[in-house]
Image (cartoon, rainbow, N blue to C red; front, side, top):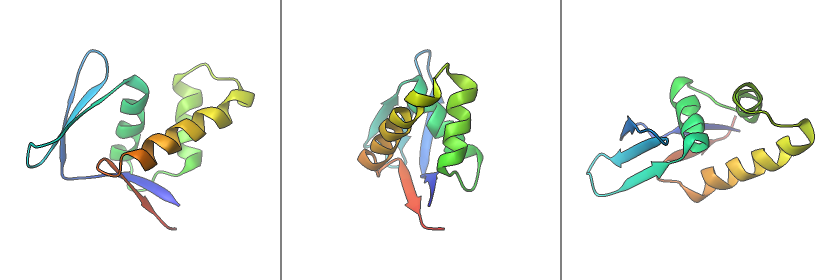
Length: 91
């Protein structure tokens, strides 16, 4: 399984993260820095897997290995909760 960010959205960096606007300009999403990191990662690669997300979290944040699973669970929840922003793909 891998994840991509939807392509038809416009985004603009803010001080606190990222603002994302739908193509029809009817929906706007405000992402915090952690969600912005995920968005940027999913925009930068054609295929983003859990290992990619784990590596990026370790690189950007001071997270203990025993807490990493909770971080991944929260990120997966964010992705599933926002199908307007992210898509799941089977391998």
